[in-house]
Length: 181
Image (cartoon, rainbow, N blue to C red; front, side):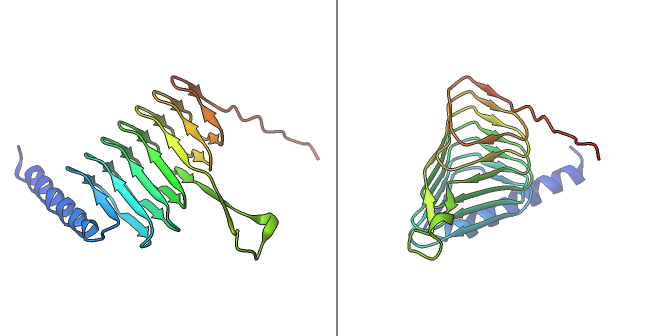
């Protein structure tokens, strides 16, 4: 192995250890063994919320994780997040093991309660469940109440807002309408 490659590996390992140690000091964040951080990870968690990440997380970042208002975010073992993924949780988001997420992913388990602006019920929340061995393509949005079974493929550009049974390939063909002037 060349010295340059070895040096890069050593620096990456030291950086990953420092990043993991930084997040482990926050009592509401837990990161499992052997994470790989190839970019930035930004975590926002309040004292009533929890983020639990399994072993062998791999991310290219930036990865944004947010748990607020008593929300619980769980990510299983051996999950991969590509560039610019964002998960915001106010109730519960549970992701199984061996999942892969394409770039520009958005997962959000709540909506603003636009019908009752200014009242105590500012948000409407429903948990999100993503099974094991799921591959989610680029530019996918997963909305509150969605449930994705094991061994699913969610094609790029999809919006998921319902239950997807296990062993399903979901794709959404977009038919743009052009009007002549």
